[in-house]
Length: 441
Image (cartoon, rainbow, N blue to C red):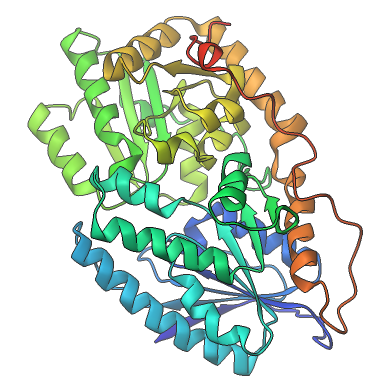
């Protein structure tokens, strides 16, 4: 049912805080947020166990002391809703079985569920009878995610709403990736404000750093546009391919689009490249080991975030934006509330009402202005170093766990904790007028 990866050198476990993290839509090896959380918890003295799917060709990572990762099988789901149901049902059964086994063998006092989907609370529910606390690590707003994938509401959408409501109800603490999600937990989830903590997505500089460029990723072109991330329906790669097609129609053949990642939409995206004759402009590199991924991004002249404009993406913080900034890369993306909060003047923002045309125009303009690329890249790097790096999120992660352990006998607070809100938001949220301006400002 599972294979296990374990670290060596675990310290004594007497009265030690023990936690279980459950991830369903990715593996530990491909989820930088979960890796950061696990590393911070282990450094703070927690014994950490992770349950997640096994993904083929996943890299072997060195685990921090006290950490074990258990992988479970997951079916190869098709792109339809039936495939999602089969995947989630199998995962739910295996996660519940593995959680029971871990509870008996290693023990845990807290379960952290990393959505999507919002079914992980069902795994946590029986353990609450034994005093286990549940932390909801809110990665994605599931109802909005469903709507972004299928462009409609209906019975399945209402199930997402019900599961989200159940998740909030069973949660002792909520960790939100940004202030938009924090307000969602308070207003829609009816969670007390002192139980909702902002733990922002951010890269760890020990994992994300510049490496020497490799001109091979340019495929003989003068410029390279880089992308790293998931490739689902909501991630907008179809829009990026339309941008590449517009470049081709305009006779611009000096730019190559090198795209790193994988997902359910990848077969359809590859078919689009073939049918549109974009093979000379676009390369899908697949999922790459960290070193090669960093090589691609370090070589890129511009990095892009083509996420489809929709409520889900407007309220979400994308870690790829932070990774681009960590490498000092200028960014082009569609205007969104949280995209602007993260990137500020390190990005140009395409007008969603003008779609592909405006995105392509801004990308072309930035390619033709190297001094602006350097300026924007430097702004992004400073922005990350000064306020957005992972080290600024760690105190809020630990504060959320202090809140979860509050009242448990035999577990004294480790240290003073910050308030649920971030010490300082990245910057004031833009007004609609300011947000719509191009980033020449």
